[in-house]
Length: 173
Image 1 (cartoon, one colour):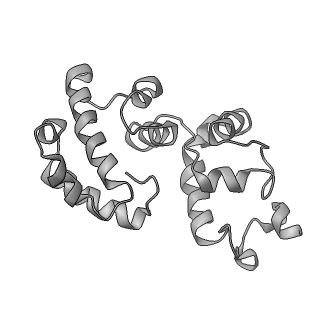
Image 2 (cartoon, rainbow, N blue to C red):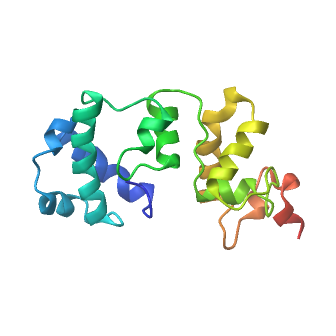
């Protein structure tokens, strides 16, 4: 749900929605227009409403109503990409995963920390998996996203407040 939307918008809406509709069975007969209205404040709400309904049907038909706990099955679901799948593995199942969003991709790449030199998030994920100890994978997304939102924004980063600026190429320019 968070794609192209801010967490501060998505989280309250999703919490309320899942409180009212806690299982996939609750979504399969819901009217798509009704669900669109519930998701209206979230970017691409129409697509996401259809995906939630279709995803719920697939969870029931293929996975006994349970969210799968492996990347292959997760990314087979409508609207679930690698970042979302890795977030589910990390935060729901506590399995080692590196979720690469725009912040992780931008900050770990050559313009900032220079840990990797990649063009797309999937490559960033693969490269980070090679250099970050597995026991730290689950911390990467949370810590770097927080840093990217509060300090290291793409426009006017707050380098003077940055605690890791000595490692940053951007700060040295």
